[in-house]
Image (tube, rainbow, N blue to C red; front, side, top):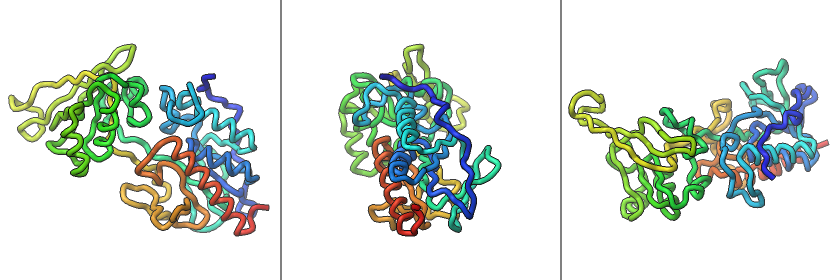
Length: 343
């Protein structure tokens, strides 16, 4: 069974709450992390409220089949999210379509202001699962072919292009790891690197440069992606000019065409932690700092728990996000119980 359509009947208006009568738990984010947290919290009788846009998130934008989520066959990203929503709603989780525009965790209960609600939500516990957005190049064709050849995750989509020529854009550790992963199944891998050297660690760079199936185009940037109704066919690139990159004069190199059935853009992620700057401890790159949490999902503020990509700069998979969502709900249930707030 293939699912992907949006079920608007699952969404409800924001519930009424107050500082004197707060909700037990609010979950910000409607991806695998947030919805997994909702399922676990709902089954624990915590009546969770999930706040997330009806459309949005990395998995929602994944139009190709999700093939690496255990137990799920023939489901697109939106289809997998729809299944999770229905499961959470079946256990009486409340789904609110919207976005938080301001959060105050300086005192309990926490205050969550929504973009289209007259009154804020108040909550004893908060699970933050707002994810991290892939950085994109912003070039023509990139959005058009996203899900039809252009991707930001080789682990997610690389196997779909086994036996094909593929491109990796980027020169850091993540790009090198993706190139090495793709080289196992792809016919050829071309790395497009805008500098004259890889920024990846020495060990990874050595493996890339010595791999017979990986070629590197140095000092090259992507101008645009081109293809047809079947999907991506080529990346149109340009080398950096010898005159400082102005693109003027005879010193500029000719346009470079790299034929590829897929292009994996690996130039970093932006964790969606802006609402919490100055309130929760952040690590390098803007991720939530979980260094003091041990094996838990606790953040630097008691009662606030983190799940998914905004606290995970290493794995960033739907299945690992779902696992951390379950952990966050279990940690939140334990916290509420210790405070005597589960009745």
